[in-house]
Image (cartoon, rainbow, N blue to C red):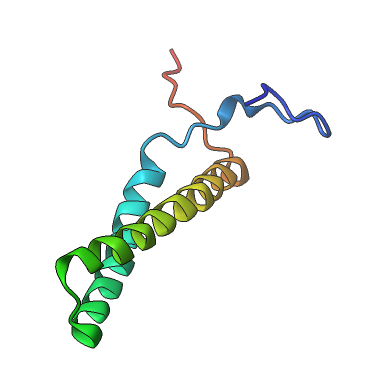
Length: 90
């Protein structure tokens, strides 16, 4: 990632989302994936190998898509609210 925006000069030094996106992705994608897997199981009653062939790509796409979006949202919220590292003023 470049240190600053080429168009407006915004310094990207504040942008540190940490593990936040991964936590939100696990919660949201877990809910969506479990719903899909349960629907797939009760609607079609497939063998286990079919679950692997169908469900794993669905889970991977959900996770990878959400990770990028949620990381962008968290960094945008940091910028909008002026979030920064904590400092001790002495």
